[in-house]
Image (cartoon, rainbow, N blue to C red; front, side):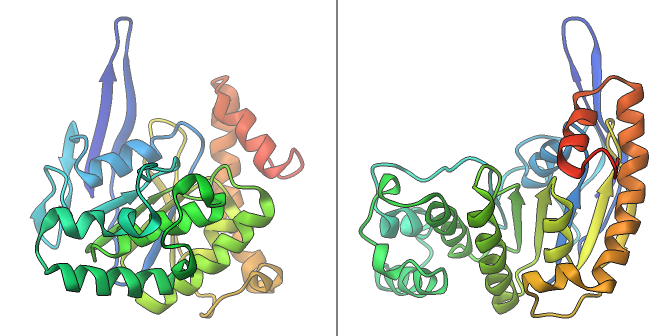
Length: 271
């Protein structure tokens, strides 16, 4: 992403969401994007996915311009998008069946393999309403993984889960990523989640969003939740919070809802 800006016209104003936003994703790495509520994270994801066009700037994947949606770039959104009338197996098989690039036998073999990877083999014949929130999230990940995209985009995929389920999903996703080395951009508003997962952390400014700081997170893999108590982790967290604190103050000055979100997320003493 190079020099990307994006604004929206309303009846009363022009609202700029992104301003001169630039960064590069490393192949085979898990890059995490964090920033204030309303800073443009989801807009950025939509531009990379090809659902929206940048007003200014360029987005490329392996040197080719991104100008439309593609199976090379798949998104797992905050809200579940599983088809309620399909079983887990049918939901996961949907993409390969529609694309018709491989035989029916190959599709079935792939579905069996990916359901095993995400721990849903025993739930292949269940419908979404019969699955827990965490299982639905795993089914969403399986449905994206089976298409073997060049870039996986995750837009706060664990938002809305209870604290225990979210922690379990973080650990589960870490194992899934570390087994696949899938090039990934993961969006979150939670600093602990960001640092637990990231190879590289991109910190966005308050709106209009741009990249304020890039941190390389050299915590050893495989990772577990206990890394959150290490001295190295605490140093990374302090460095990230220093930038987030600056952006929170800007949000306060503008009377933004993002400021209240920061206080709730990180506590008044930190912000």
